Length: 345
Image 1: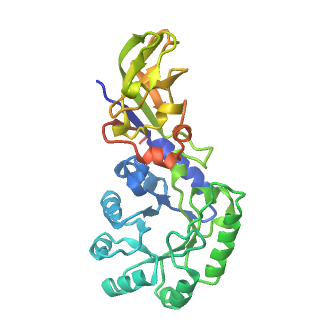
Image 2 (image 1 turned 90 degrees about the horizontal axis):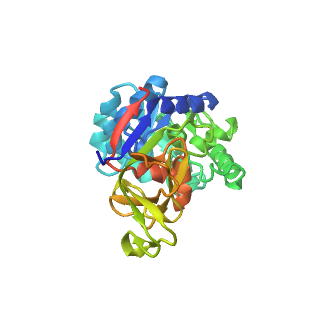
Image 3 (image 1 turned 60 degrees about the horizontal axis):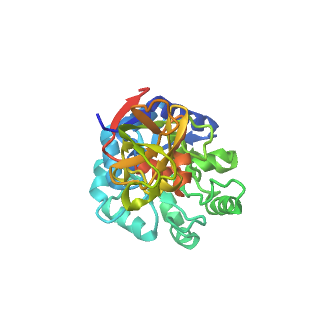
């Protein structure tokens, strides 16, 4: 069957979360936004809950509604985007905790859902989401009187531990929160790895759960195997694929594999990308097209039925480096045409 096989190791996800939770001085939550980074929140979230996660984080209210159906009552589900216009019914029905980002959101929340739980997001220097110090000063006493579930901010440069921005944001966050009576959260995966000064009462491990950097000790989570459809001998001067993008200089055996950019494999991978056939690295030739990729299998004694794009030989960050992006994008771009299997449940 010419269908790529995506295998997701739930035991590895559990182990990665447990390792990050063990590093955390307080409580470790779990970030499962974007369908658990593309790996399937319906399968991933119950494993994390079973491992001990009690507080989950999603990007928008609709993700929270889906997650509540998966987890049932009990775990706290925080919504990073806060209380957006039109969110009230979803927040109420699914018992979600919006992370309020502005005075306008705070007014919307108390008017639409008086008494409903909420959290606060502060801007400690990233200038993306959260209240500026002046906004927080104006709202602080009113908000704290209503007992926010969590007060958080987000680090801009946690994947670069020596970057001066980390210390600046830590100092700013402390200045904004040191005397409050509410749980605080500053760190995702990178912040956890920078040590206890950045942990506060709650951390929010995300990419490290799924096997990505900066958690270098993470257990690999995904394996993506792509089936070989056809092989051919290409003589010098012949081209391969769209636009004559690659022309053979020597006799070359070329295999065509069943995957492409419709499956979330970026076209930029053509320039520096490889797949693995057992222990042999095979160069991608020509362009990545919608459904097909061509590779050089000249050195193989026997062409296998499948080759590996992601797995033990190369992880999401290796592929990300080849296309000039980050592992997050590789994971969240994985398409819907793969035959998905889950192991380690």
